[in-house]
Amino acid sequence: MLKNEIITFIGPEGSGKTTLSKKLEGVIDLPCITTGDILRDLAMNDPGQLGEECRAMFATSIYLPGEKFLEVLASRLIKPDLAHGLILDGGLRTLEETKGFHEMLQRVKRVMPMTIFHLVMPDSMSFERLVTGEKARKRDFDTLEGVAGRLAEFHNQLEERLETIRRQEGWRLIEIDATLTLEKVFENVLAEFGLG
Image 1 (cartoon, one colour):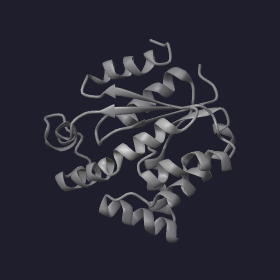
Image 2: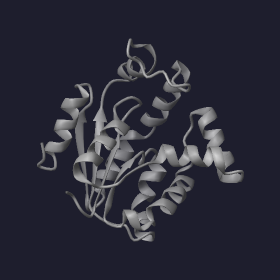
Image 3: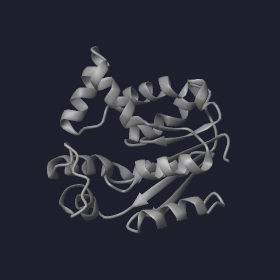
């Protein structure tokens, strides 16, 4: 069991971020929070400005502004169930968000070591896994245009984001080949914690 650590995955659409987060939760006994669920809940249930911004975000496949996203995340991280660490499914998606992340953690008193897994795979595999392949996920928003829009967002300033992560004291960035089977990717993730 890990304690006092934040673990997150960054990677293109369809690279397995959510699946790996959930599988990891079952092994290391840290709570997993999915930012997509938080934002979907706001889009469905918040009649105010924030809910409107979330609805617009889902309609256009564009991320919330970093400052706004960190505000939403801070309101969840401050809760007591996350006092000793967590697995974050969905974060560090923009440069603004990545640069402001440590300060947000300081604000909610959740500064702890952080492991960021960078899941690496070609965009063609995103389309195959989500839209065109025989076993494609094909959710409502998994259209060619939707996936292309989200991939463009992911790649925007990616190198600057990775450099920001590398420079942050207490954070470690680990590159993982996400073209492998999910089982093998998960084994490689567990190996980084001496598990498996």
